[in-house]
Image 1 (tube, rainbow, N blue to C red):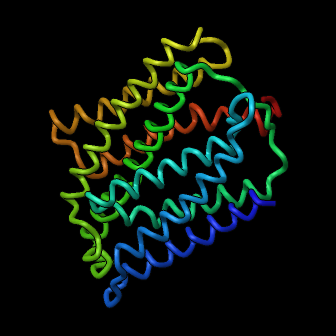
Image 2 (image 1 turned 180 degrees about the vertical axis):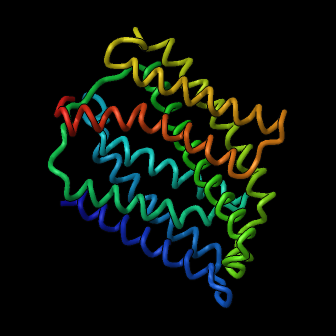
Length: 267
């Protein structure tokens, strides 16, 4: 009951924050960044509480599909909020927060998932944390790339001029984009490296797809960075490649969990 209450409060704060951010895009309305950040922060506090209640057990952690999605979404929200104090990325929360609400709603209405805790050693927990940080950073990078692509298209077609004036300049977003991509690639490299160090066999039957897809995503992100620095890639080309890499990452972990837990009903 308490867990459900905390989930509902999280959704309420996130919906409030989304509405405030949308209103802030209107030409004649300006809402204080303190109000915008506070509404997100309050929702994030309750989501952390929900995650703790769901994930932490007496003899391990419960990392089923729903819990993993909740953890990653909380990290994405927290990182975006933190970054937005120095860089103009708060507009991404308009896309991030409704997705969080959807995941939280599914967590409430979905059938009781497997809650068997698993005990992990320090090395494996380090690998999991680095993986979550890498996924979160690269998903934020993908959202930034989508925003840059939309701005490019809107400017070329002379649409949404009023909205564009409320958004950061394309050059600013692109600079942030490649900084995030470098950070995400470094985190993904560390995640893959710790996987090889602390997982007995990364190419075992139940892990081979995760390993191969993660390595493919790593190669794609590296190609994007090399293409940008050596060939001057930008705009839609970069967006398409980043979406491809992010899709592979999501498939590598959440996709496999969905197949095993939902379709095959295996844990």
